[in-house]
Length: 113
Image 1 (cartoon, rainbow, N blue to C red):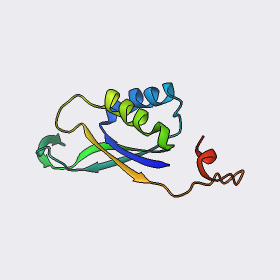
Image 2: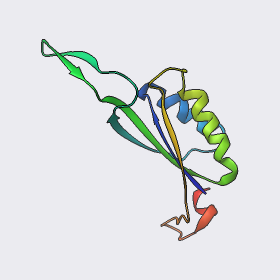
Image 3: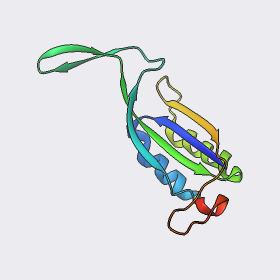
Image 4: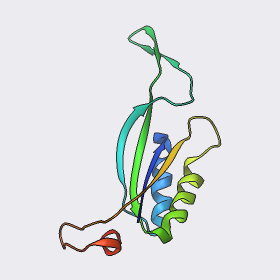
């Protein structure tokens, strides 16, 4: 099993979510985050004054998938989340040793299906 963490633009969330559902990966966790990467700072007008901001608002998507679904999941995130520009985001992949569905106590691959 693999855990995928994808940091994406907020505007891409709905299309990525629909893309993942189309390949039978409906279970995701979504967390609003902010951070900085290769993008430069930008200015924003707040209450009449110009402020320089270095942190961008992004969305962190987390999903745990079987090894067989890993590449399909990554491909969908890239397809629907990338414009080919700086600031599109990042995808991280981690190994998952075990998963347990708390309601039924089912373990392993069956817990994420």
